[in-house]
Image 1 (cartoon, one colour):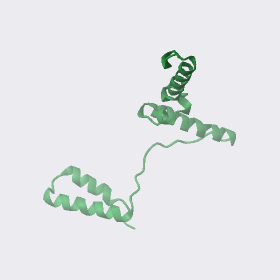
Image 2 (tube, helix red, strand yellow; image 1 turned 30 degrees about the vertical axis):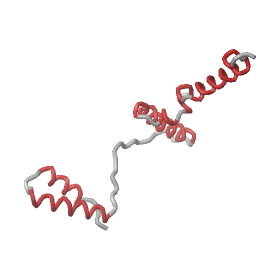
Image 3 (cartoon, one colour; image 1 turned 180 degrees about the vertical axis):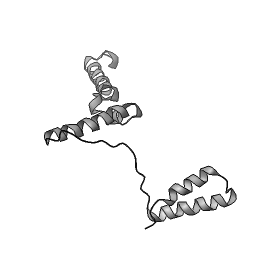
Image 4 (tube, helix red, strand yellow; image 1 turned 30 degrees about the horizontal axis):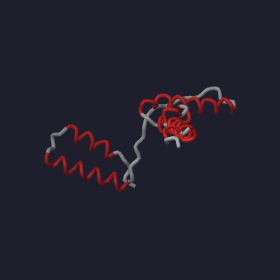
Length: 115
């Protein structure tokens, strides 16, 4: 009787299992189908390009030839959270009223609507 290491069927099965394990490794996924890879910091630029390209393509399909693009950010805060932040900053300023950083943060926080 042949040992397991010499049994051709067992060797073939072991080889097939090793190949399946290798092919299942994320390194063998196509980059455009590897969501884990696409969500890394290194591919952020590519994702942004795709976002712009997709929007551009949709506008072309609808006959839109000119647009204006505005870059920026918005921070939305719930009114109760905004009021809590203002109060915290006011309290912090009582212990150090000359802190320019705290004064600036309070000025910004105070611009958030309280309604």
